[in-house]
Length: 396
Image (cartoon, helix red, strand yellow):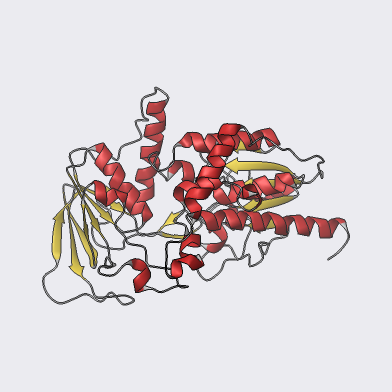
């Protein structure tokens, strides 16, 4: 029954912030049902008892589908399309499947054997995984359309937002996701008894580090920096940390409560400076040495406040201020897919402007939660399957 609505409860049970719990009616005046922990307990018991077994479809449709991207949306779309009997091939640019689940989330939040276990099950059910394949380069978009009956674009929203400030070009300034990708690859290499790649050059040991941003990605960076032995870690966030009453009291049900920015990462160490905006990066000999900024007012304007600003020592700066939209170069531009005003693939009912091409997950809706990506992948599979059925029946 759990798999009927969630293909990967072992992922959401570990990673999801559980908006379902804040929506629970018991939260009006009591603690909500602990849905996240319950689903994790159920699925792990199922794995332990051998209840989770491969269930390949009894009959194949003869239709072939390429799913580009193996994050939660791509995996969910692949799982559902395979269950409907289509021949599904997942194309992944990185060396192993999982997307940000594998390369963006640290092992101390999600050990990668959890992903491997599920991928192995999908393979035994008939899903084919092709890693190290950069769709949009080789094969091109037209190659995919000539080789498959349909294509699902589930590439995620990987283009990071940048800081357009003086000093951005200095060495020692990196996007947070580049850092997390390096750390996850290094940890994977160590677990397999191999030396980390020499390309892993974002070292934090003994450094003063400033992380710009206050979301989950920033917190994951902070926790990694502690483990690497950074001398100091400071998180600079433009938002103000809520104080005073409990989060539910600030925003009464049924509205979603505000999530307190303080997480496990800051509980382990480091400090958080709120309502501050970084305006300049200072350096010497081409390398960043300090971060300069101003205090700001409340949202939505975040207007600079009068008075002195602030300056922090920093020989490593990580930018973690979110993601803009999917990468347009390559597959999306080759297929000439229409985009919405935010730069995401325009696919209101999952079908894009290109016949036989569908979109799901962050590539379609923008950066969101893992539970939203899984739900989007499932709905995309349903829309694609219905479209193929209509065509087989001769309907428009």
